[in-house]
Image: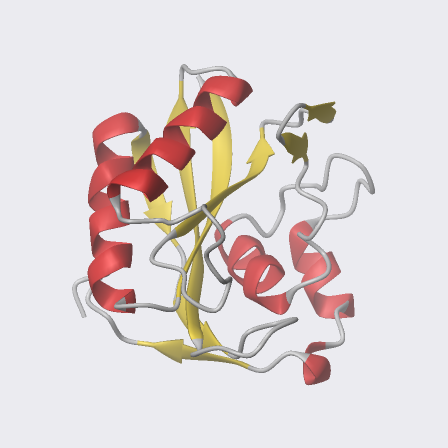
Length: 165
């Protein structure tokens, strides 16, 4: 079984789409762990605020199959890839890590390049896997988060019922 981490985001009907996304992820992957859900402003474009979090889980699928499965879940949740603006995202599922695999394949790169660039990815990943090491830098995610300049990226935890709140 491979240990994977998935970045999850939504800025349109956020609570509904992340609940639907979690339900779909539970149907495909095992041993799901869900970080705190954070709200943050969009990065790089104007839009409604996003909900973002990270899911850790296990799978027997290979990395390309995981990416295809995540895209299918996004599609099932109404993701529009045909000229749709990033300002309206029903569900975004990004494979962040697949064990310690380092690869660039058609359609994806592992580890995902923005892990240590965005607080909405690094903070929840460090929460779920503080001692896990980045496959490229070798630094623990907790250490990467401790070094991160969080003043440029504001996050705030939200309650949306994923953890029985």
